[in-house]
Image (cartoon, helix red, strand yellow):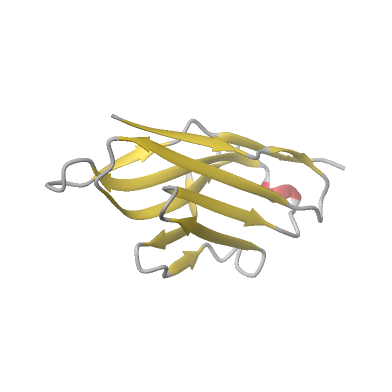
Length: 120
């Protein structure tokens, strides 16, 4: 069907930057929305940023002004540029894509997760 491959996680110092990428491949007719979620230890998964097909974006209050989501429609790829990282940004980051393979119905697909760890 569809595979989402994430890359770009790692260990970074507070104040540093990381860029996550998520590439979708397989049978893709259309992608409506792409987003990033994160889950910290002992916490529920939360929406970090979201971008729809028109390019309109939304962000969690905790990352506004620091994170930027973007997408390359030709490559079926979504990015998350994370700047001014804080210890509380430590989490596993999951890519989420809402897509259709046939044009008849849309469904969610998830990436495998990328660990982002803040450590001084």
